[in-house]
Length: 340
Ligand code: G3H
Ligand code: 13P
Ligand code: ZN
Image 1 (cartoon, rainbow, N blue to C red):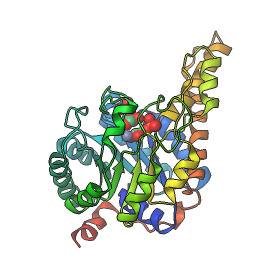
Image 2 (image 1 turned 90 degrees about the horizontal axis):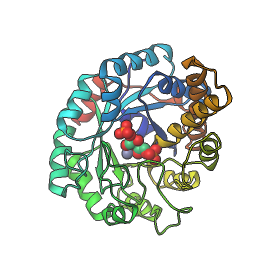
Image 3 (image 1 turned 90 degrees about the vertical axis):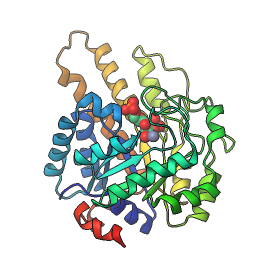
């Protein structure tokens, strides 16, 4: 089965009241972890690569690793998605590299940092929608800006600053009409990275009610939650037990994501939880076996630890068991769909 457009998976998720987790990758072990988790749970797959990931791993390696994933898992529908594309050129280069879905993040200027105005966002997003849909590739847009890490993506906004860039439901309706995106990423108080909240988030800082309002106004739009790692206590503890120094932090509780899924959330982005899981596993090997020098002996456990997180999210978000139920269309076949 070739790579499939994101839209196919999200339409199926909407029809069946679940969401798909979109998992970031930079290397072979992460792709393997996701594919093993998907096989174990019979899940459709969304693998995503940021600009930083493409630079780190090189597009050619990524492309061939994904071809291997497709070849070895012919029973699973697999999407390769560009995470946080910073401009039309980045999105088009991803499409050239076999990505079946792209995110045009026009909420920020092309420096990937400065919050953009609405007109700019619509202009670049519409440009990508027109070009991507012409070749059957799906497009995610973003309205509002997330807080979090400044390096490479994200406005570097503090949690308080990010609260001033929440998605406006009125504007969301207009944005979907103006651009024709397949999926809409919303800013509801989450941020990228491990340091999202200083205590378990309440509705004041994690605005799930905003998702409910956006879904009420746009019942047919697939909503995307970014910055949705849950930052589990046990993963923080493992890192700290083996010499790490992660200050106490809180993520997005899985039950809040499940509330979102009841209200139109169809794609949930998770990267940090896998980074934490891999780091904890590697630290443990380094502390327990001081004489170890074979990378397989620590990358193997890291892969296993990431797989566990992926299985847990695939199960919690409801995508488990659905891989075989999705009627597949290739990008080529989607060209006609998008013409309508
Ligand atoms: O958008 C955030 C993802 O966690 C990707 O992060 O830009 O460090 O690869 P990255
Ligand atoms: P986390 O940092 O919460 O995993 O978010 C990842 C993300 O939103 C990627 O786009
Ligand atoms: Zn993101």
